[in-house]
Image (cartoon, rainbow, N blue to C red; front, top):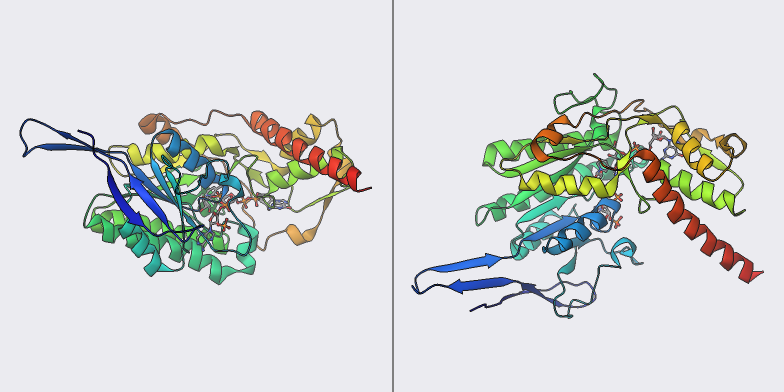
Length: 375
Ligand code: NAP
Ligand code: GDD
């Protein structure tokens, strides 16, 4: 007979909520044997970010119960997940949000012990490289120390039950690259406070795997973008500006270093790779990349070209956007992920740019209609 087990969890998001953990008990003729099939549950830090929103969608599609960590702010930060969020009292809801912060280790441990997730995806971070030069200490606390707090929480839970941990490591760790293309064996030479914090988190993840025999993995992900990309990252800054220029809402686009080369993929492809890493038979570290690199200028040329605009007429350089140290070239080799996880990036840069341009053109059209109505 199917039975349901309920676990109470007080989430301060909206109101106290009851978390339903689906549990189906199949009792055989022998009362001593009980087969319990439980749907998997995952805990995502950074669920309100670009990757967190795509990962939450993917896991819900796969039948998971998903718990997300949300920072308290004076305004809502849940715009990227509002389409999958439902009132926690609604029957069948499988997405639950909990207030917390990566820098608050005790609360994080309490939450993880309470939720008992099967998988933890640590995607939360101060993720902007330029900003990390302005806020190096905070970036270390959130991006480096935060990862350690997640690992510690997982280590406590791991004493009671197996929990798998994904750490969002970054191609930025390669910094002043020592070889091209970059693989899992390429040494790190970080070039920013953000990259230093990520290198720390990377090594702690490996350390916890070795020291405590934990299933803890690093995904070394190269840049991945989408229509949900934060608007101060260069690809989104370009698609937002070009589409606004097309509709007469903006005159110029000010950028920094146009010569930097990046290996840009589509975020939706990359969250599938994260999930596959945690389904692999053994914990290991993997690069996810497209194997193609382009300059910032070339990405801008693609985008402006799609809108029949000449980028030279609109793009100007503002040294404010230069970085104290730059990562000139990133190009990843994801052969290991291809062989062991069956993962490849399936969206081309042109397809990605098209998705972003179409999305931002709709936003610009809405803005133009509102501007016209105000006149
Ligand atoms: P993102 O859009 O900037 O999202 C970052 C998330 O972290 C947001 O949900 C943010 O919450 C949360 N966060 C920040 N500080 C926090 C704190 N102190 N406590 C709790 N949560 C906090 O980043 P993303 O592009 O989705 O990237 C996801 C992860 O992958 C990050 O760790 C990033 O460093 C890493 N990564 C990204 C790329 C890429 O190209 N996108 C490549 C390699 C690695 P708020 O919404 O409240 O700000
Ligand atoms: N943001 C920004 N704004 N970057 C600019 C600009 C500008 O106006 N002009 C030129 N760039 C150049 C930067 O100097 C950098 O070389 C490149 O564009 C990409 O910058 P971002 O889009 O900010 O991304 P990032 O490569 O620094 O970092 C992203 O990718 C990492 C993975 O390699 C972030 O998502 C990191 O969190 C991630 O780890």
